[in-house]
Length: 276
Image 1 (cartoon, rainbow, N blue to C red):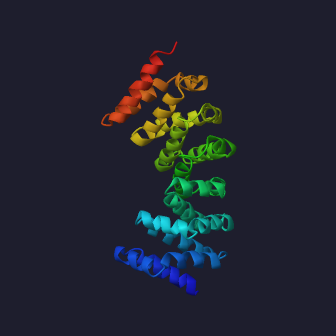
Image 2 (image 1 turned 60 degrees about the horizontal axis):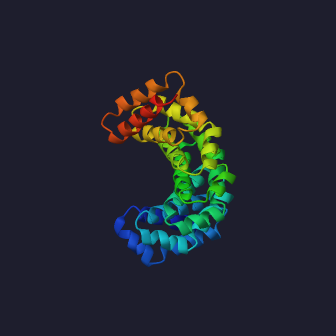
Image 3 (image 1 turned 30 degrees about the vertical axis):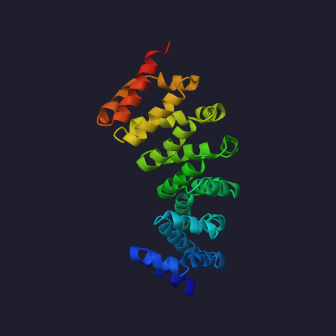
């Protein structure tokens, strides 16, 4: 009860900017992490603890580093293992991880500790929660940014992204995050590109053009993926399907104010014109 009440008070204090420095000055970060560690089986405390760490970390870079150095990442990862079925806990844990991926060293540590697998597991168990999908995709985007391609290939990250996109086709935030990761992957080596192609993710790009015509960030990522994979046979098959050119033109017209959308769309149409 004491820990739960104390965490509740800290959560309220996080709403006041002037209180952030007080929390830090009096050892609030260490107290939160120690409290989470001592009460690993208490889901309520774990949820509040992750929420506090996330909100403090968002305040300043130095605070993020202090949390990492104080074993805050370990606390969050342990939390995800112990309370994998608890939606509220996992939602806060995924969000905290996405904020704490501050530098390559931390990202490497999280990957080595099984962070990617834990995020994939969270996305699978809570496939119906759009918030968990969004938070987990945010974290995966950062973790995969400089991860070795072999690590990505041995994980189920592309399958997890596709499942998320399939189950939240109408959620623009999920689509934007998922396609953004695939766009980054489409710039990687041939093995990663082949994995995207064989996974069926190009169909998700097509569906995004249909469902999110007026959302430029989603359209831009879909266009970019098609461009990066254009020389691959499966990509050309998808682009040469009946109605695809109309979809591309319609998306460009719906985002006529976006210079990037127009540039990507024109590049895609030019490439199609040169296709034998």
